[in-house]
Length: 510
Image 1: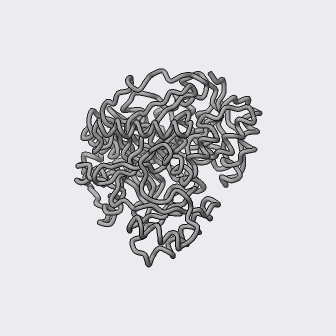
Image 2: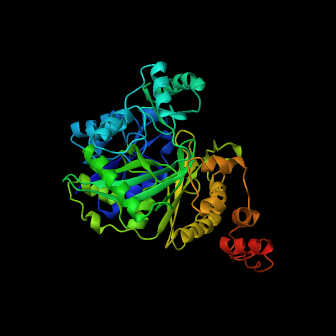
Image 3: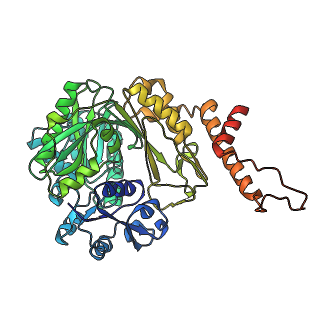
């Protein structure tokens, strides 16, 4: 087992890996930029090293600096988390060349699956179901027109090196194709330094369902069930759950076996995710493979009882998987809300700033993976993800009920968050009925926010009042040994009521 792991990341995922290291008796090393000096992952780690200015290119994406810290700290492995360098094959190879274990797949596997066109080519050979389209980049607008006419409109243009909706265009008619292709190629070049774009048939109202896989370095590969990821805004996941409302045991087995086939075709090791698009007839098609730990991994952990970060570390240390496919069972239902520092009432504009008050939820079935604390200043320089709130129940209805209760306990003062958006989603009849597809959230938001003042307003009012009482108490507290300033005798006893009692009083006045 490793003695010391450097975590080449920040925020909640860095905190998550720090905790896993602590549980395994491994020293955790953090890295931080100028604006992250007081971040929670730095406070939680055993050691922390400065790596540069706020710009990610000069800090969290700076391979030489990170490898230098690994050498100076004596780390024998690096965990990349997600984002930043986690899917950078050159970084994975640089770790190997430096004699440091990269906790993830090999550079070769990463390169194969990192290019969507190359991945499609390899999956064709492996007999994996694909959405009709090209498996190589388009060489001209004329080729795009021929292919689109053959597979039929609407079609989707996608960047070969893309992700997160960059370099992606939906085209409904032949007249729009050329302009859309130019726009997709231009955006792909700006975002990824690679203008390669391919085309595939656009599936109408698809669901986005992914399968978690684990593979050790001894040839053993398993799948751990699926996650429903159809709640998206601008192709970015917002809420995930497991199991999917539409996947039955037989479909789960078929998707899982295909996911394992994908992993084996890529000679994949460690944790990875195979993503599928599912049409209205429940046919599924390979979309891509994410060669890293996913943001939404906690929902899989809750329904399987497995710790994916522990398993990542053990696999990288050369251990065999301690179970087979037959040992894996799914119990209950889990759902995750991604809490962002953004304003849903202002087109989800980022909301950096100081967190002046933080009230966090707890109770049965609630897990919170967080990178924030009261008094911390959220920087503008990085992704605005603050925390993940996960609800678990014996079934989907209980998971939803617990999340709604937890969201009403959650308050972040000083900045805006998207907590109110999840209250709206979880109460929506279509969501509760599992009627989902990738266009669901756009349709919901087109109707405007639906505030329930009995829940969201009351919780925020109580939280604000509690904070005000605390500030007033601090301002009026004068140490005088129990006597008033004029010497006329003991002053009246101060109000010893705690913030939660004052919160209850405010609730009683509503």
